[in-house]
Length: 297
Image (tube, rainbow, N blue to C red):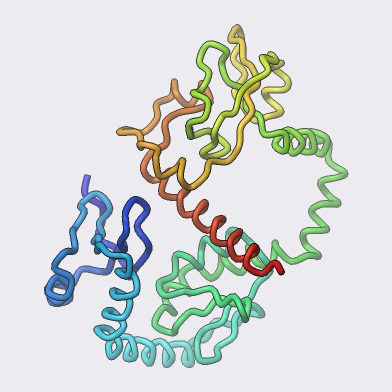
């Protein structure tokens, strides 16, 4: 089924070959100019985006779009600035200074919401999210959720919840579950072991199974690990590690979503969306590792 037209501009590096994935809201005139500037670009109904080949494609497309959209974006920013002056968002986490600056304690929920705001960008040096005024309405639509998540992420609030958790009867179970997660092992049916050395999808994400010592899983242990414990089915523990970027690139995606049977056994072939997300994460980790290595004397 064709993907829905995007509601924002996105430019990112392609996963499988040299080039850039480009998506932007449909405009017949803009598409015509885009195809004239990038004749080798290919459209994909599946992803709802263009693929522009070339090692410098990402930079070339960014420069072209900046030139094409300068005047419309400037007008949108001015209109958003006027709207904010008339009806501002009042919050300790938001500051209007050139752009809209969002500064909160670390929260995965906040990050997920702000990533969905068009043109939002993380400023590493300032440790703040910068959002242009043209995206005011998109930010306003999710701001209540952002503020709630930010307040929950405050250190004092985290400490309060930890103290409450320690007094609860579920605390010991949570500790056991965390300890099990650090052991990097999964319960799977003894008769349906995942292929070793090959990325597979699990409840923990995409992993590579490295082997098993044949230890049988107790039903209580399986429940603690967050797995389904079916009576009469023998399960064993298998050990796993995170896949490398090269392994993820070589992995073929599943042609369909996993069924109930595949999910019940604890592992299945990853879909294209699963692989794309894992590749982006692996690529980011590799860049971070290279940056740390470059800083060492």
